Amino acid sequence: LLGEDKKRETDNKLRACLLEAVNLLCTTHAGRETLRAKQVYPILREMHKVEADETCFELNERAVQLLMRDESKDTIVDTVVEDAAGANEFEEI
Image 1 (spheres, helix red, strand yellow):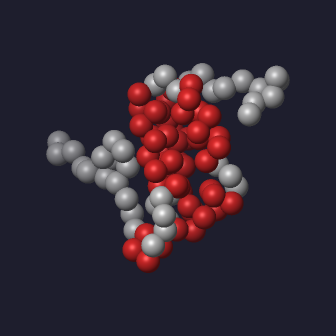
Image 2 (cartoon, one colour; image 1 turned 30 degrees about the vertical axis):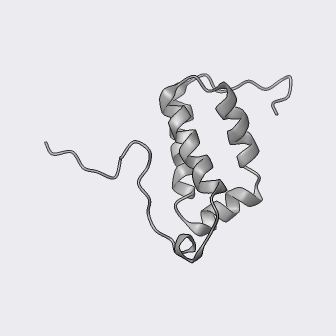
């Protein structure tokens, strides 16, 4: 998918941050529909094939699962879903 003059992002943390943003977009029906319309899945699929970082791999899988699932009445209602790392939980200090 990348042209000869393009390079894949080498920073694992930046890739994870971008994948977290994609996952956040997947939490709403409108976000999922927009990502589908922009054909984000083929990019995620190709990224998945070469991803070596475990965190990025898991975030990628989560986004793919959300994008490729069947939409029913229950999934069309916008709800916040927990990300793959469980970041919706607060740590007690």
